Length: 221
Image (cartoon, rainbow, N blue to C red):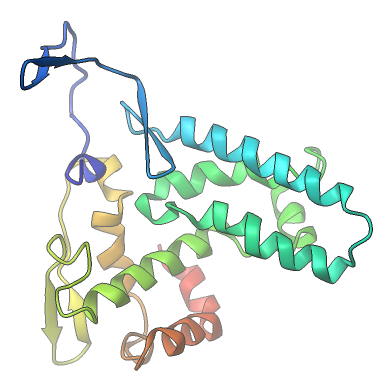
């Protein structure tokens, strides 16, 4: 599954599919499966997950609108504590996820006639692309500072540069799908951060440095 997350077959497969067995039991093929709250489809398009996320997001927003007795400040607190985490969860799995998230979610609050940039301004959202890059950066920071104990440590190799400090070895991939994955985008994002950000003493200092250098994060491509 981990390797499948950063590569895709070069040619489409024409069936029939070979039977897969677990012991004496023949396993059934399925178009999608739910793992740890995430819907993973057989083509890794993430569309089933986006669909379910949008449905849940819309329902939560409608519930908030019905709570008229709470102040705007209290409603915003609920919004950022309960709703925004739904967007952040699994966003680091691939650039495809963050690019697909924006279109169905942004107009759950405001009319669909509004332009994209107007929606972002009116709901006071951080650009989803920036949320994605921040999440990648946090993952890489935790890998670098975990002494090999992070769940993804064995996928990424740390290298030391005299000029740039602690970096993560760049991973190569032949497919466009692979270039949008955490496997490829993580090291790219980490390399493009300033050295003083990467050398933060702890996770809180790192988050603050990212916030203060949001313009830099925005320029990372």
